[in-house]
Length: 139
Figure 1 (cartoon, rainbow, N blue to C red):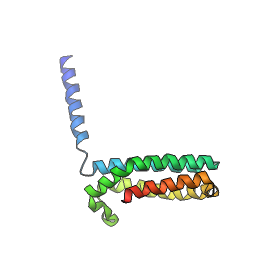
Figure 2: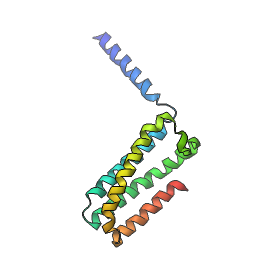
Figure 3: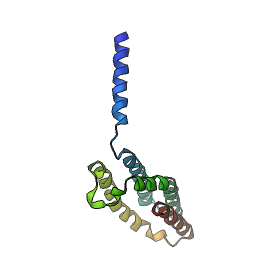
Figure 4: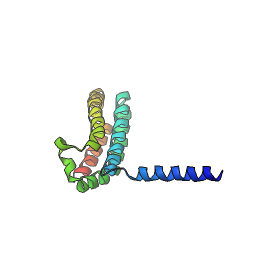
């Protein structure tokens, strides 16, 4: 029994060590994952939207997530200026970039479907909020 406890503790320690060694860009990958998750949720909600209210809610929810992530995204750009060069993306970030590109394709379709609601005042207000939240990442 005593040896089992020792082995279990040793195994947990090994897992903890390997989990902590996430690589140079592990924090950037995590922030990008959060951004991609938020974008994916937004795209899925837009794709299913059947009213201006649903579109406005989706846009506002996405804007809120972007407002929260913007400082983290800016911090990653400052910390890793080499990531601005899309042509020399580190291998650690290729999977994350591929996911983002796939989401971009899906977003085009979802945006086309929601175009019919873009003239709605509630949707327009939500779009303005989203624009402002996106600008937070660029400042």
